[in-house]
Length: 238
View 1 (cartoon, rainbow, N blue to C red):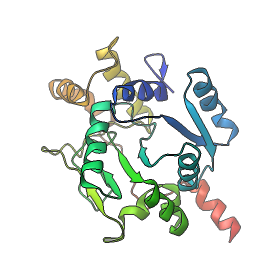
View 2: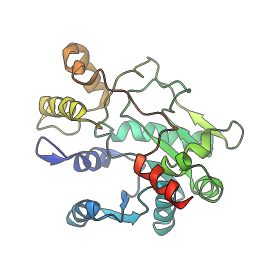
View 3: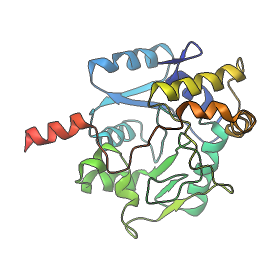
């Protein structure tokens, strides 16, 4: 889907280019025919692309990390076009400074989140990701990539960054048509700029609160939820 005439994934890649700490961007997509368009986008924009399992996303991440020799893996999801390089760097720096196995600026319930939904950043060392790849045996752990790293206290050294003020109920992700309409409104407001920060978005929405009514009734998925097609495939295997 597009925002202001540009694919959502293009906005994300462009916005995180301002990061001072990321060294490579790799799009980890699936081998499904439907994702040929993503591979074509990557090829046309000189962006690395790895194609792997549709449902075992942990396996997809692990294999991509191996191929690109990543010692630190920063997970950003393509439904989060408002991520910016400065925010990414703040989480990466905390990960490095605290010498943890896993860091994030949000975790799903029952954990508390203070950043808007859609500014989600997860970081893991390759060693931790490899252990998760070897040991995670729950469907949701494979599909959601990193729950194995944080869902059992003491298993890894983890860090959860909180924002000073709580914006955790605000929804800035793109899963539904209502979400897309909200994003289009935001990007149209800042056009032609693409380097606006998440704090500028916050100020814009605070001054125009009616805009966030567009998707106020959308419920976010829980960590335990998985794709129904994946559930069906698992049932067929059993």
